[in-house]
Length: 316
Image 1 (tube, rainbow, N blue to C red):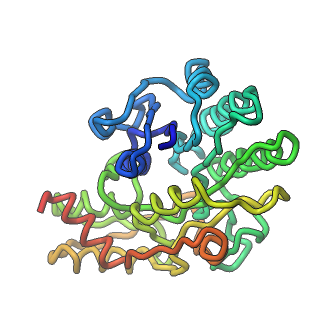
Image 2 (image 1 turned 60 degrees about the horizontal axis):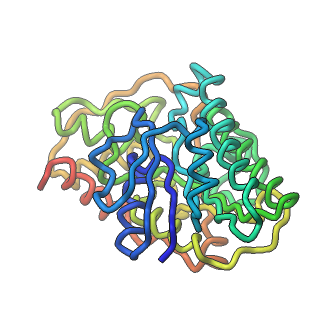
């Protein structure tokens, strides 16, 4: 049994991860400020602490909790918010991460937990490279959100090289599935589900040809769990301990809209609106490194995941 701290464990991905770690017999503590997470999503077997990752309380938990794993999923997740308020985005995603990293560094090296970070492959690489993108390609992010994630990863690489800390970055594609809120900081699939349920038109920003690598939440959880105990590559440059977590398949937004309509057995009109700043035109991940080093591969096909997500939304 391991002791595991999950930041953002009341949120979409974090609550699924808490469920999985508990099912595997581990002891789980969740911290979340409930800005977007939901208290009812924290599993009954987990210890819950309501706090912000920027707080001294969060740092104290890391220092005093004798954890084997710190799974850091809390953060500002909305590209639109980051464009509107980059200082807030940086405060949460950079300063919050540094607060936890410094707490880990303060521990005796023999007692330091492995630090697992939920990063982004969806927007980290930018539009100047042609997907599918491997971890080593040049990064040229187009949004403050992606910049903050890249900055946090750069700090992690520093802590690994200089302080000998075990830091792992998982660069997610566009994650979707049950518990993703169709309001607020939601992915397009959750938003489409909400509009389809309300019999409202789908709204697509841009012409709908932009591509993403859509990955089902259970596959992301699998990657986290495997990377929690896997032998890591040697400490090196930024990408040494970073892994793309995606399917390796690009899908257009129009493809997703039509696939969801097929899964639901119902249709609504599709409307188009101007493209939004900071969002890449094409995004796709090469997950070969995760397969080779971690033994992880995504197993959920998009049609299967869309059907499961729709069933959850409708309670079917």
